[in-house]
Image 1: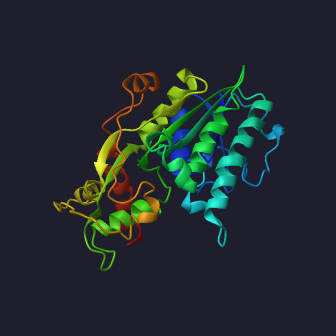
Image 2: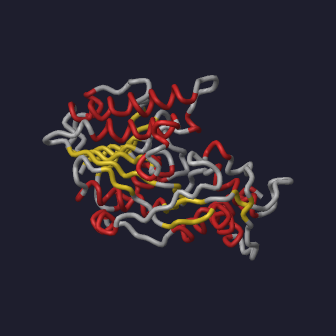
Image 3: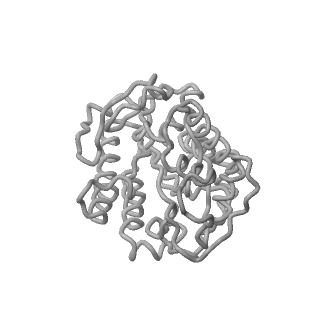
Length: 307
């Protein structure tokens, strides 16, 4: 298939692009800016695109068999000085479904949205949290564009870990530095609570499965392992060879602050993906610790090269 990956310069979209290319598909990535030259995505066809600003046209999307959308907006994408809820509700709730409608009009046959797990696991947050509501509107709005000849499904994913060669990862660079004791006076602990984590490799496999075997109109809740935040930080210590076991404390953590925990600190967001759906999408499980080791190894290699 000829596949367009929107958000193909980031961790999730870039990894999906490379995985789908390895399966024999013809890949074009799209984003506001080209991928870093050091990444394998730099060798892929690139289309400049800003779906939030509505710059794409039907002609831009004509000729693609499938669309993978990995460019949903979160706290990292709010423009300076903008109101975050207003931005999310527009970017995710309005601009994103409109882009899927454009893809349908352009003759794209299949589309997969990579969304968020929150609306499915904690539906009560849809009414109380603007970010979660925006993700719900994105999922529902994209799937509402499904029609005869245009299959759409959503993969609603949890916290994602992993790496793409040459792609900087500020969050995993920070967590690795934290385990190395390079983050100043930040004490060693994890906030109470936890959630589901999934490797980017598992998610890319699910994307491939959704393109071939996904049910149109379906919202798939994908995921892997339920881990406390203290256990998650412990994996970074373990990956650098430390035997530190990170304790849990009921207080906000500078590297995992309360504002990014939509359900609230101390409230675990845990679930088990449906076994039949996991089999249908054909993605691996039990891959989180390996993915953390992979991410840390890339950070350590970068540190050594810069020394």
